[in-house]
Image (cartoon, rainbow, N blue to C red; front, side):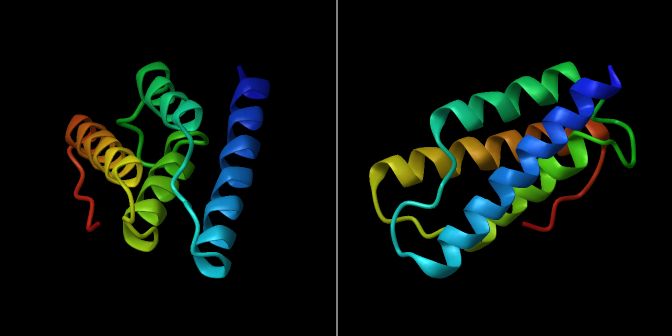
Length: 102
């Protein structure tokens, strides 16, 4: 179980750095891919989202917040990814009874 959490945390940290670097440096598509979005949805179903600090869920929420605040919407695919991220953020925060400022 701990090994899975460490692997998911590493993967999310890598994605977070990729999204941050792309959002700052390039003006190309910086939204997560469909596979990454599905992985984030799966993580919110597998792991406990009600914990205040969780090894996997907290970086997931940080990644979603980073995408929602820093990634521009240029195409229809960007809009689709943004709506999916927003829905996932609302779903995760409503289950945990939290407030997401993004």
